[in-house]
Length: 68
Image (cartoon, rainbow, N blue to C red; front, side):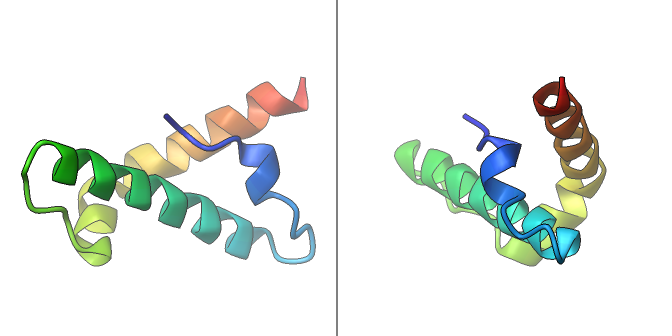
């Protein structure tokens, strides 16, 4: 379900933007999942406030797996 971090890391000059693109893709997937079950999706800021620690941890984890 999560996007491969390598595809989000194409912009090596600005790693923060790679993380932002990765988070945005995860948020889109979350919105689709909520809509699939007839639920109202979170707004981006709500999603970030609720899951920011998990998102940061998951991004670092995916990055370390792809670095192997």
